[in-house]
Length: 335
Image 1: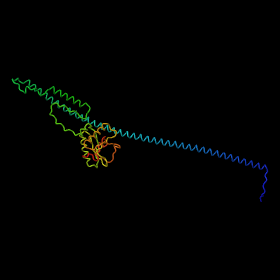
Image 2 (image 1 turned 60 degrees about the horizontal axis):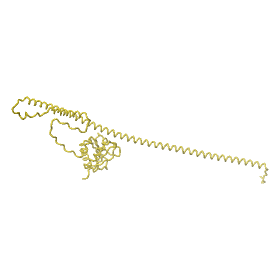
Image 3 (image 1 turned 90 degrees about the horizontal axis):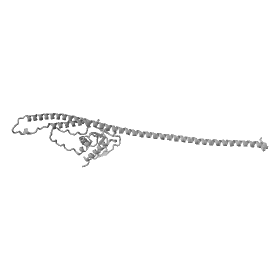
Image 4 (image 1 turned 90 degrees about the vertical axis):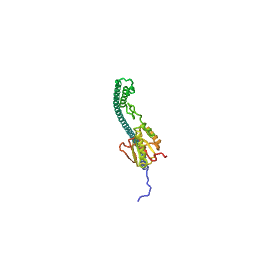
């Protein structure tokens, strides 16, 4: 059994225990200081790591934004390149139309030159025959025996003047040479006649619609007739005939699957030359003066794309002409 008596400790034992407690307190203090230092270092390193992570995330986000901006810039450049390609295709088509028109004019000029050359040959033959007849008549007048009374026919001067015939023949040859060498023109001047001809019957005056558009002869135009409009074929035939009489090159197609177009709308391909726009404006004025509800509009999409279906000639293509004439509802003005 343990005794409940207090244990008596001497001063040396108390000093030993006090020394042990001091060492323990110093050790705990050192451990506490080390723990606080480790916590501070850990906190500092955590802040540094968090800052580095945020900087890396910000740099990555900035690089992504730069890539997006670069992709948008490339897309804009591609769109501009596509528009430029479309504009170049339109210019090429316009140049082809102009070349074809010039070829037709050159062919017509060659035909006129050949006709003038044929007329010149015929005129030379007639002039030679006339000169021969005049020379024979002059010789007969000189060799005729003198009479007391000269007959009225003998006193009359010869009907053919050889010098005048030669002069006219030279003028005709000069005109044929000029017609064969000069640049082709839409219209050719009539060849002068060697012998007097009876006055030609004046041609009937042209309709105002045809007369106002003759200066733009050779302009191609595509006529689109809405298929669901009953009077569109008759109106389109009238417009096509008048344009053909004015020297234009119209082609007609029936446009199905499209509605909501009012009057006669004249459309011009984007990027066309000023001459085409001038011809379209003159066409709108002429249609308005002829009793049509005519207006000038814009094609909102690519010129080569259209809704619905087109029925008509395969050559030329309905998208080749730079001017389109769309005949819709209520094309004629109300009386």
